[in-house]
Amino acid sequence: MCSLTQNYLPLIDFTKKNLDPSSSFWPSTRQAVVRALEDYGCFIALYDEVTLELNEAIFRASEELFDLPTEIKVLNTSNTPSHGYVGQEPIIPLYEGLGIENATTLDGVQKFTNLLWPNGNRSFSETAFSYSKIVAELDQIVMRMVSEAYGIEKNYESLLGSMSYLLRLIKYRRPHENERNLGIVPHTDKSFMSILQQDQVKGLEIKTKDGEWMVIDPSPFSFIVMAGDVCMAWTNGRIEPPHHRVIMTENAERYSLGLFTFIRDLIVHVPEELVDDEHPLQFKPFDHYKYIDYYYTDEGKRSKCPIRDYCGV
Image 1 (tube, helix red, strand yellow):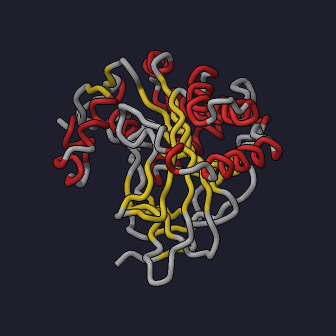
Image 2: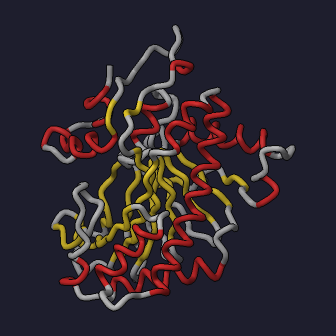
């Protein structure tokens, strides 16, 4: 039976001195990133580019969003499963989430804002756009380090122009009496990469490779950088996405944010540099969004490892 552990994820410093590729700190930070992703599939980044003011503003904006009537929130629809509004689901009744597609573009954020606030909400748009842009920079720094370490910089550069970012704003309500405290079921993300941030109410748990669950305590300026299924395929299995869940143990509403990276209109394939006698090819080329569609089929939902069943060799 899985148990809770007091072990901690690696904490990696992404403050300014470590962000310059020409600095003496870059190689050691890069080494720590790759080791953490290979060992855990994730790590905690200490990243102060999101200021305390912006951090407070995005969580206030999230509360404002979830205060809207349900009939307004359900207008947030998407052709991609789980990218729009999700709520009132019997299997996860505590969960409610909305998604801003193309969140690093002003058009994407304004389209979402104008749908839910027809008279406009400039403060929400500016906050969501600024937050998404800054967190996306962390994602790209991490992946530049990974691609350098693996010698696949050109392959990563080809992905950059096809990256699309989804900002999900999430709320978990308190469990009712005699109601399960499961916020969201154990899963791996279907993204390329995910960057998660909690407010001051804990609940996120990550499963280690030895089968134990780690509780991840929230703290200011800390972001959980997590590999998704598509990163595992792209790295030919070197980086595995961690299973994670949310358990509501505190008597308080919980808000969290997730910026998820997806590859649009480009076939993802394993770089040839990552295939050799010791690392035979594990994944065939595939379309990221078609993989998401597969995951939400009956076959995909039953699969223990959907990405392998979808495009594994």
